[in-house]
Image (cartoon, rainbow, N blue to C red; front, side):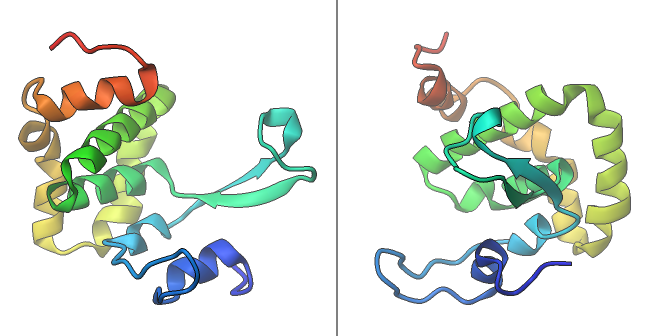
Length: 150
């Protein structure tokens, strides 16, 4: 399905080492992002700065949300705020398809996880976002360029 020469997939499947400006880093639960990705074509006509049409692979929404829930506690304060924004954007963009995302979670994503990971993801909304807190307040201005109501 994916060519190893495809730089994005090769990069994600290859252990990172010190090469130029890229420092070694652990990509936690990256396997979730590789499950049933969506193929999207991008080019200048749909707002992307590329001269030719390119086909890119994007994580499916269920995998993306699951991965963000699993790594949330290991991220620093600024990255947690960004992740909250990404989660918001996914829910906003795919809100009309939440039933399909739930089905994808059950059929494609959940089956490959350990029981502890499943439990963590299924409790994520209540545990990570029980109320408006500093993380959510810090997320708001990152993209929206406005002060949150905190």
